Image (cartoon, rainbow, N blue to C red; front, side, top):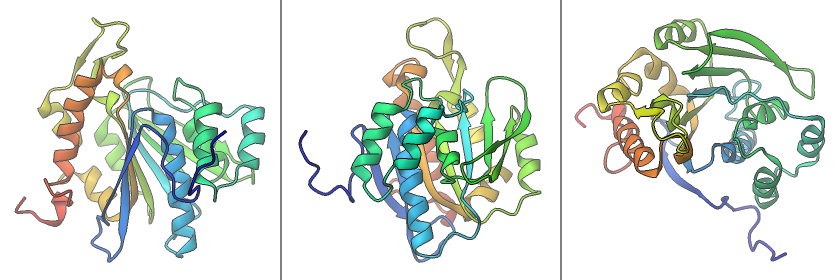
Length: 260
């Protein structure tokens, strides 16, 4: 197998990463990562948690994951996956990327609890379009309990966030959240994309949800998942609205400059 030239500075195929200002206005940067397949978010969460730890920027046990997704991507890791994760060399990004590609399910529903197993993310907060609101826990390899809260309604999630005292958050957005119906491309009559106004009602830096998130974000992952958005055209249209709600044409945060 060909050797990766620089395994410690490596992005998985099918991903794109940008350096952006910290949304709290700190004098340091964070990254925004876009991927076609959601499971590769795990790669970036591992990388970013290591960075936060190495610079003493992590002010809690592990970053809280706030994820927006049509589905509940909360499949627990199998015993075999746990063993593989425990052996994973987090410093070798090539190894991490290949492990995600080879060993994570292509349904893209197991990456979150795999990350929680390694304590790369702490509590998990999900805004979803499937199943009822619920609360449960997940215990990682060191016995730490991760609270998982799932919400169907944005206002309920906003109220919950006001009770929390998060210091570090990873924001994760799966664009298939913005689909009415299943959105799977093999069922072309089962979906309808959100209108621009419907998307803007959720992705709005002036709502309570983002006013809580933005000062605390230390990394942002966006999954395009065209197979669940009714195709790449729908995915790109949704992406354009989501991105323009948060960033200006120069990739600066809009909330830091109200004139934009």
